[in-house]
Length: 109
Length: 116
Image (cartoon, rainbow over all chains, first blue to last red; front, side):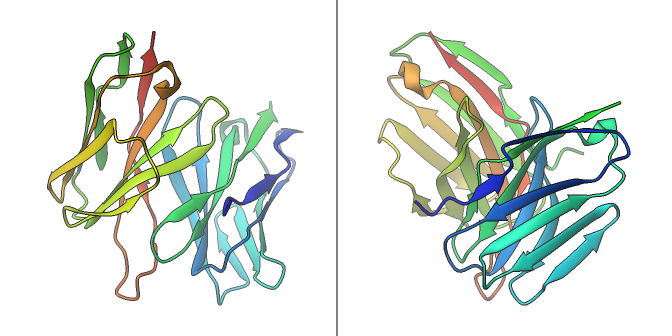
């Protein structure tokens, strides 16, 4: 299977804390993307990091990519209750995205 | 304006029935997708169309037939529905770069299908 994996599967933190989610993948990539899915909704794109990039920031999000280890991490700083959602990484190849199994993040007020 | 829309949002039906889900995108993208998300939230691609042509068919049973009348629409018809077809189906669209690289995908709100 080409499917990647997020770690941990579930994460529960307090508001204001940082949340870190990791993603490992198996195949070569053009880019690595992170998406958020709120309960009962569609996926929303958060950030895309290209294979020749090592780190990218967007607001409270910070993504790193290590192609030698085939891994990426998503850091959400100063979390809010509204960040409660499932987060998926997706390997961007030439034909399709391959999604991981997701990390379910709960931010407690 | 909704970028990617799907209808219906909910679909409850009996085993053996035939049903269709419609998807439309107003982003001007060339590529559209259907995904299936199971009860464990695993998201798996089913089909991909580029400019009305099928480019990905991920070993989906032939009871599932996508149809793309134009590049802004990708519909999914399912024949002889089975219990295992119960899932959330997502439509998405994107623009693939000239180098063939997958860019951001935009997802619809999903269609929750329950087969009884």
